[in-house]
Image 1 (cartoon, rainbow, N blue to C red):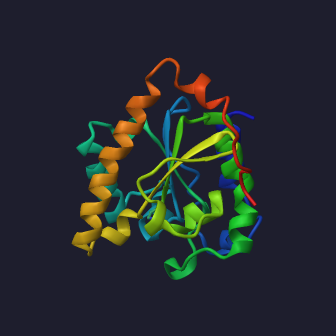
Image 2 (spheres, rainbow, N blue to C red):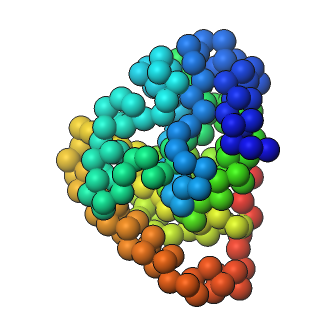
Length: 200
Ligand code: URA
């Protein structure tokens, strides 16, 4: 399925009740050949009215974080676990996440990024089953054929200077990890390692 078909399906999706309260679905944004994908939790109020991910204050900070390591927002693919805004910005329920997950799985399959950076606990737990972001943030995690790099959510750091220090340091670790992928032997080496199951 093409990225355009996936996007069109998301825009008219009615698989869960979040579709009833949304203004616009937020399929995601970025080039189909992006090597780096960011996965957030779900659209907020601004995203809901614009149909684009991370266009509010968390998005502005994400742009700043990308700038720290010389990456432009237009170079990365940005998505969320759920594509429609949970009312009042609550965390999406497991039913809502599971209803929406096939869209994200198709996006991942189509874009095939080198690295999936999960932002916050919801994305981490939904995609990897890991619960403890405080233990594994800033490190590489391999699950089946995907490589994850868990980070704190930029919104959590907006009013927490200590978390901002951690996020900014993790961003440099992310850059080092991406640089390692440039090594021609990297992907043939990891193909020989045993990988854990993806999704639960
Ligand atoms: N927070 C998210 O997790 N996603 C967005 O798109 C915006 C804020």
